[in-house]
Amino acid sequence: MKNIEQYLEKNFLNETDNIYINRAEERTRENCVYHMHDFVEICYVASGSGFHLVENKELPVYKGDLFILNYDICHTFIKEQASDNLITYNIVIRPSFIETQLLDLSDFSSHTLSCLIQDIGNSDTVSMKLKESIRLNTHEQDDFDKLFDQMYSEYKLKQEGYVSLLKGYFIELIVKIIRCLSNRYHADKTISKNAQTIGNIINYLSLHYSHGFRLEELAINTFISKNYLCKIFKETTGMTISEYMQRLRVEEACKLLTSTDKKVSAISDEVGFCDYKNFNIKFKKIIGMTPSKYRKQSFSDNNERQT
Image 1 (cartoon, rainbow, N blue to C red):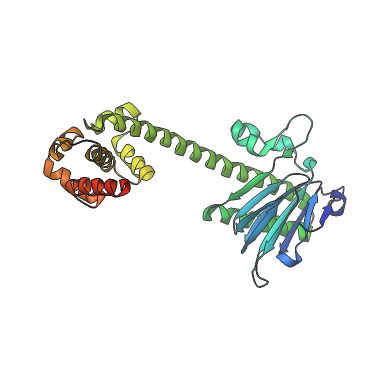
Image 2: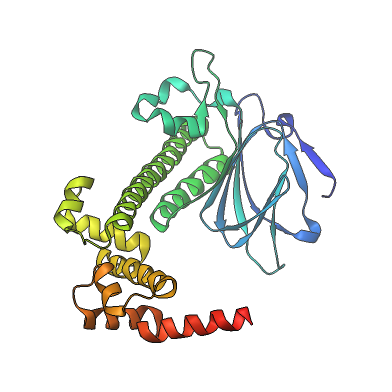
């Protein structure tokens, strides 16, 4: 790591504004400057792509990536080629810039706030935790592009009342960030819940593969509709429930074919296939050969290994 420059509040913030906004075209790796600072910084990738070097990590970044950096975090942005157009917005603030009475935090869940803001109270201070990149979707990027442009324009022109407008814009920025975090948190909870549901179904099928299943019964036991159950099962496993059940039966048939001398027709019945012809068709589709050929080849392979 190159020499680290120390950026201090006094270099960027005056007593009146308590906020500094910059729009920068980032440098190449050879010319980059690592720095750390004694202030909170919000960074937004407005265009292009490159890397964000944070402490000992090198994170690829693209348009729409947003970072919140706490005090004393060593970092820099770089572009790979001189011709690359990596543009970032950087907002530096003092905690006192936010008038907490204007930000009604009761609108948001405690979990979402804990991801971003803590220690807000009568002390009139706000501290922000280090967050990894929040990757905004296309719709979110449109909102953030417009907001960062407005904030940067107000800061550069410094027309009468610009500080008041910037405070309003900054509160809007915080609210939009919290919404993004909240949306991702609820999406993650849904995915986690679905994964648990599918895991329970897979365990059930593993125990009852030879007896089959009734979709209505599975849906009732998981408290979700049949259609939604089929949808999330396919999304999670890449197979329908019936396809998964057939694969379980065929896998068990493979074990019986190589570990017993039972007739193939008997194994077909034992693993849950009522139709021997259908068993042969499904087995060949999944394994690539008939059950008889699979057994013969498995015995042949075992004999070769023994000799």
